[in-house]
Amino acid sequence: MVAVALAGCGGDEQLPGSEQQTSSPTSPTSPSPPTSPSPPTSPSPPTTSSPERTTTAPSSPDNDVEQQTRKPQANPGLCASGDVKLSLGPASGAAGTIWRPVRFTNVSGASCEIHGFPGVSYVAGDDGHQVGAAAYREGSKGDPVMLAAGETAYAAVGFTQVGNYDPKDCQPTQVRGLRVYPPQETNSKFLSYQRSGCANENLRSHHLRVRTIEPGKGPA
Image 1 (cartoon, rainbow, N blue to C red):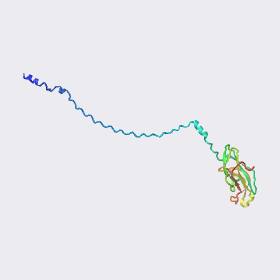
Image 2: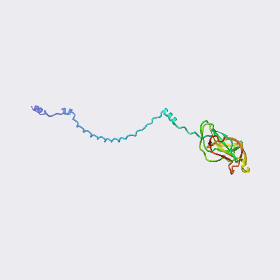
Image 3: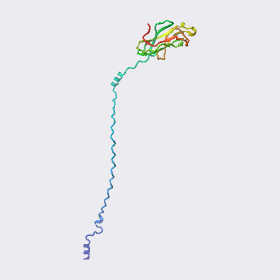
Image 4: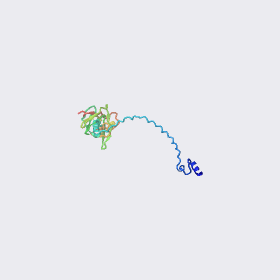
């Protein structure tokens, strides 16, 4: 009787070894970590409009040819020594000075320009050494002369007779001809003309004179 009563009193109690031991206790819920705030959004840089680039298309071969044909032709160059042939025209004058045209004929096959005074002097001997002073430039420089192929220009050269001088002052010397430099040229040409010249370079007057280049052949 006593045992039954004890059993009836323990109906609501849970004994050791009951479900309480087999069931895992519920873990407390971990709090969620705080949400990190999103970084502030950087403002977009202001939009700048790029300047429009003008692209030049490469020229076509046809355009290049057209441009080349439109270019003005270069001016003809100065007549060089090798471009001209020299000759002497007939003599004229009086009062002790003979004038003869030294002619420059363009034999280059192309146009060239000749302008100003040629350099002229007497030469003698096999070595072609100069005799006396070079020709004095008389008058003013003229206009440029354009010589087409085959055309001629001339410069008048005055030859003073050696008899006009005292022989002691003149020192007369037989010459073979003339050394001639075309205007603005450093290469000379020889022109045969045998006569007497004054070897003294310090004469009080000029035994040779030259005038500026002019178109044509000069006095006939």
